[in-house]
Amino acid sequence: MSEPGHAAFDFRDRSADFGPFSGNVWLNCAHQAPLPKVAADAARAAVDWKVQPWELTTERFSGVPARLRAALATLIDADPAEIILANSASYGLHLLANGIDWRDGDEVLCMRGDFPSDILPWLGLERLGVRVRQLEPRGAVLSADEVARAITPRTRLLCTTWVHSFSGHAIDLDAVGGVCRAHGVIFVANVSQALGARSLNVARAPVDAIVCAGWKWLCGPYATGFCWLRPELCAGLVYNQTYWLAMLTSDDLGRETLDLSLAGNVGARRYDVFGTANFFNFAPFAAAIEYLLAIGIDAVRDHDNALVDRFVAGLPRKTCDLLSPMDGPARSTLVLVSAKDRARNRDIHRRLAAAGIHVAFRAGSLRIAPHIYNTPDDIDRALAALARA
Ligand SMILES: Cc1ncc(COP(=O)(O)O)c(C=O)c1O
Image (cartoon, rainbow, N blue to C red):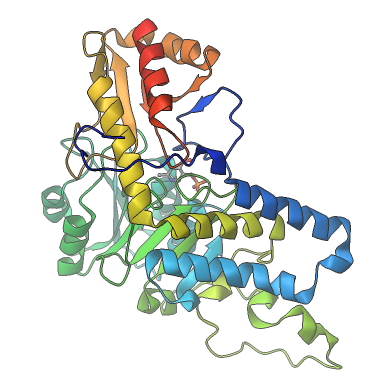
């Protein structure tokens, strides 16, 4: 397939790795990805272990989180010991909000209009004297200049999304992170709407913490996610969590006596979500990430970009406006469009769903989010349905 803007791009149809879609077009990955078949198989196997619990061996019980940690570490170029297994993006945000040694008068910066997960955890800190400033971006998302101007000597942390759920705009992660670094401000990036469709190397990117939901661009089950903290930040947290599975294995329980003490530095995994061996969710989550890694995240990005190119080029401009970026680094895999008459969007959303074209209705607009399982034909069907609606 030759794509607009990607003349040499050799499109590979991967839809058979997912589904069956039964005639539906799922363009709502930004809400919920479908599970790849390899991950669905892993989930079924995990159910079998529980149906016949003797199959739930110690190797499997310990192996599932270890395999997931390794896959996530490969994904972001981190040490597996720095990965915190979670059930959401909010998990990591609350760990930070509750674990940083706040001082009266500290400031947290976030972006007005960001996804609620990025704002709510900080608001509870106001009772400790922390001031939460929701910065109003001039455009759809904060620019590095706006962040630089907003920072004061009391600014301790900035939390923002990488790709904005409601506008599809990506922030300039390097520039915003660079400003934070220059001012000694902790930079927390919510990468839930980006990682998997974009790659990230935490050794190079100027981020201090990333949080990520697992069920979107990483194609994992709902209630999965992870968090990565720069080791110095992690070591400085004052947060009382000492989960036994972070210290011991189930085999250790066979010892005559257990001499329990807070073992030295067990690293980031002490903050893993409880029930860390959560094989129903974490076995398919690991399989989904391994599936994406086998394709290569840059190849996934090119695939997704080609689909976004096709959609943007084919949008019926007489009746529809493109609200998210047309091209350039701020463009993401979340494409926001609106009928010229915005009041019609809700009805159009309903009509598309009735025709088996599933997109999201967000902030009064339609959000189209294609990923690795979508095909050019999906895009053409969505465009045709949009032209008819
Ligand atoms: C940017 C962003 N963060 C997080 C989430 C999910 O929230 P959480 O992981 O906090 O439950 C979403 C969407 O559901 C999102 O768009």
